[in-house]
Image (cartoon, rainbow, N blue to C red; front, side, top):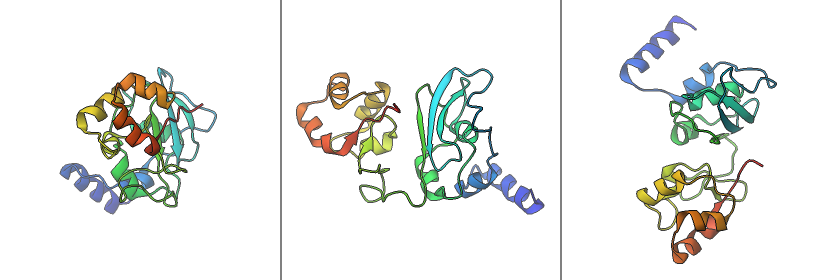
Length: 184
């Protein structure tokens, strides 16, 4: 890294700021595609999207989102730094069965004025959505979004309805907005 790059990194660390485009360029290349686990892997995490080697990876307790991305080979050149900064917290601790999706620049446009990640059929995946994304659904506030996250994973709409106990009216309002990807 050049002296100028080190100076900028030092300034960012001192101010607590991180530029997602810097993260894309500076993440290590990660392990080869065949090495899908850290030595003390106890968490299984699905890493998808604009990473070099998407797949399911084993990581140790206490690992962070950035660790999963590194293990998947790091960001692809087409990774969208603006969406990464908005959608991913690289410092967040991961949990067993988490799904980390790295958005690409050419991904389908986002729903609701650019605030929710769109899937290929414009549905929000309840199993990987952030709290902010869930709160954008019709009738969902912070408390309900936290409840939805705490009860994951959901195998189907019926499973979602039973686990969450949401009213029929609320479920009917969001049915056309959500999906339940389980990685199978």
